[in-house]
Figure 1 (cartoon, rainbow, N blue to C red):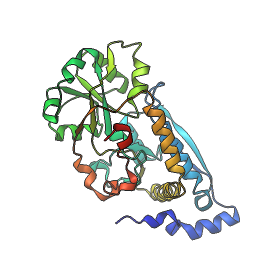
Figure 2: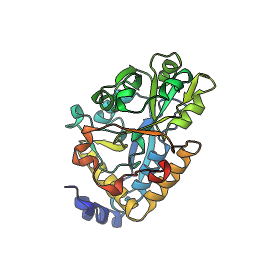
Figure 3: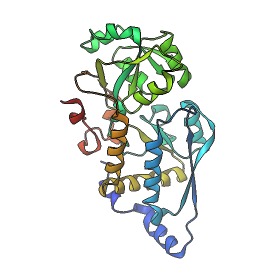
Figure 4: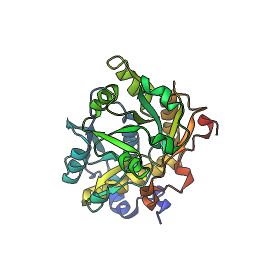
Length: 302
């Protein structure tokens, strides 16, 4: 069972850290996170602001910090290896891959309350008429689905018997969609409007589907390494995030984030198709702890 008491104390690091803080000897911790995958990629600003707030909330126990971006752009696979190797100290993922479970650790706080799992389809405008007839998951299996290589969604969609087409490059996926290399590109409701606005001039055939809302359990979490430094950072981030939850700051940041990303996106009247995510049955994802998740009842009218 996960200990909620982390919000109130610093655990095993607390006594030594408090003494060091009183004597002014706590060093500055440098924390490097990945650089955006492209100059127009602004998907993760909220999460890095939350990271900074969690670190600020724990300075008394853990000392000052400095946040930096990695010097080079890295795809998912390179970022994971950089995290293992210590070139970066924190990464955002919706899943702890089983083949990294002995080298990386997940901070067990869903950062976006599951918004990442609500998906609206980015499509070629010619596909809209076909989607109007989709009512069930079985109907959706007639369409090919675009995804980035290594994305966690691939396993979820494949488990639902959907046909996935993978692309190596994030920006290249939009070109593939415009070229009808696949039919639909499920995007988080926290991503789709901004992505469409950034790409619609270069790819005027792109459109946001008006018919469907896909939903599967999915949230973003911080990942750290299993090194002693990584585990210290894991404890610090969990403590900081739980403090932000307890005093309402995280909810305030989340509410502003949700309001911003839903601007211009109407979820009412869409046909909801739910898809299972078996991986989230593991306790670390906290799927069955209601306070960590947003049902979007008000936004969807359900």
